[in-house]
Image 1 (cartoon, rainbow over the protein chains, first blue to last red):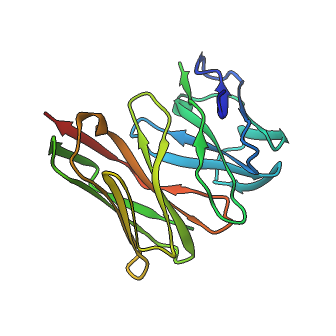
Image 2 (image 1 turned 180 degrees about the horizontal axis):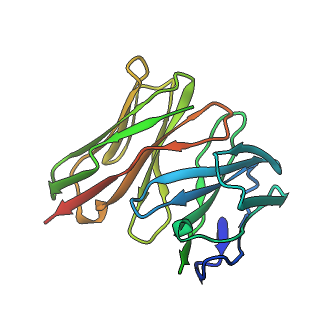
Length: 114
Length: 112
């Protein structure tokens, strides 16, 4: 009965390929996020969606395109993958309004670009 | 935008000792401050949080303090155990906001 689930858990691909990561939450939260965790463990926000609408885009390259078909899903598509895209990508969700609550994270997707 | 600094980056303590991790934030509008624990290969999980209308909160061996004037907040772990070994992240967010900004993380190692 996973609260935030993302797939796949591991993704190994060649430079230049296009790949997608899917995320779903069953908590009824209104806000979903994508975070990137690099090799130094920094957790950096990439995107934030509130009720299917993009709220935050933290200067992420255009090759990254999030899509939220409904408020329970937030997928991440990456075009023309580069070596520097290798990282762990975490999806998360929370109830941001009226008061912030705990953000629940998915298991992470370890992306390796070779 | 919000900037969260966290210190130290690594912390080694003996089992049974206390551990303290400190964070500062820049946006005075931030009013929600969670702490996350991330074990190796796992997802970050909330261990305690505090809102700006409270100065201190405690949950068994874990406590968090907040100084809004100085824009500091700290995590205190008492009677540390080996299972406390992990990376700990502080974070800050504004009310009704959609952005949780994380600190750079502290690798805590509890030695026997």
